[in-house]
Image (tube, rainbow, N blue to C red; front, side):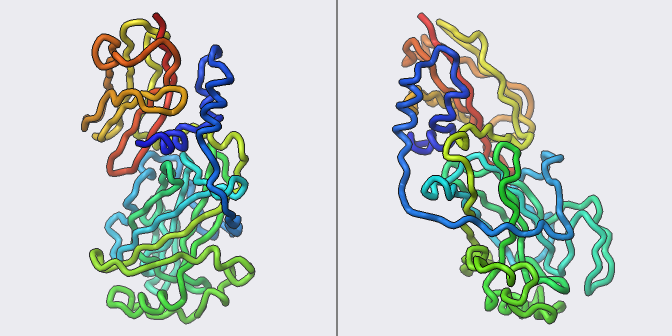
Length: 348
């Protein structure tokens, strides 16, 4: 990870909340100056209803996942959402939680009893086409899903919500170009349901028609020859504070627990304990207070369970002089990409 990526992931001014009391304001100011705004403007995402089938996905660690299809058939859809701060020159917001949910190709939602063209379906307790991801240092989340179908009264759409520090900041919906909907519903997997006869365009939809900013909710979509489906993307502007966003404590999605190193402070060696829920690729890096990576302490695939890594100044930690440092645990597995930081102190 480059220095700029670290600063966005761990935060600039927000790192102050991680630091021991003795840390000087000078160190914090150095971090703040290092993260410069890129300029430009962006648009606040229109707020929309969460619909008749809202889901609280945060109750289950299994909801933190990239692939939300759960075996549902349909044209593959790779969805990328980029979360940016309209109060901070469109800078990306890392460690924001993004929830999505949508119907399957036949217009049925998970979690509810649904009425549709195939009759009534009981999907209570099911979770298909729904999931959570945490934004990376570029403010992005990616989901692997299927192109949604339609149901009476609504145009094709995907629901999403954005949370900062577990506080809901945006509820909205994503639409697709009318021409793409028409093309998809002519393909064999969707032909049985056919074209949307109840709502023929985004401008006639009960949600999107009432907004002068609907263009900011329509995804850009291109065909993906490799999957036979589509790649779709949308930039989501959120009104977040210009200070404090970087205080975000990343949600680990139940994938790991990072405990404080011990002893801390230390002079010769310290132990970093953590627990993995699932087999994962694990990386531990150490940064100085200016956001420069000093050590890549560890990188390896590890199994589920409790683990410890020792940082020893006589060997793998030899570059550490007296002072404060941030150590960052990064975990990547089939459910996504997660990271968290804590502070260690080195003394003579």
